Length: 203
Image (cartoon, rainbow, N blue to C red; front, side, top):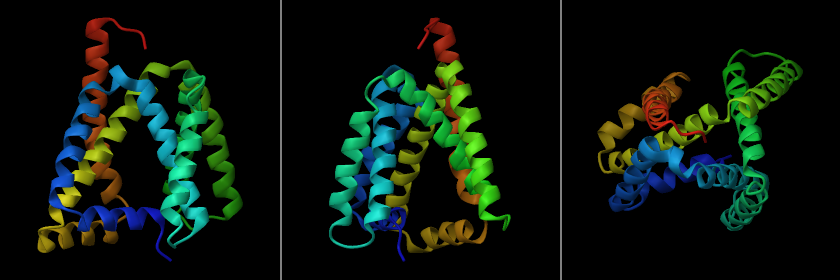
């Protein structure tokens, strides 16, 4: 069954090529200046997670996008106050998601995966609460990388041969997609950290 993420990727691929321009520009803006608007980025991140989870629960159908919109608005609104605690929860969710994704290819027992994900959630939440500045930069850098790659994907849709090559690489190895997102995320994180330290700003 097609997931909400699959539907979104197909929509971006087959959408008009012009949609790639605002996605790329917004992605680059977040990668360079995300720390300046971190509160909005955190709310948007929670809204995106809420939309994805709600759409997955609703299942495929005409009501999926409506459910995603409502779920995104509700979760985003709940995360708006107090946003400094929402950052900690978001850091925990990211850590748990990375652990779950990494262990999903190891054919481990479901209980083991959930236990490790829960431990990662607790540990990463605590780390994010103590080191809010670094987590904010990481989140905005990652969001920028995702939007940048989404814009590039919409442009690749006009080149079936090249798009098929990248799709084949992603399907053939579970490491390709994380690598594509990790590289711009790390580069953006280093840049933003340097800027924050240069300006001596405490987020």
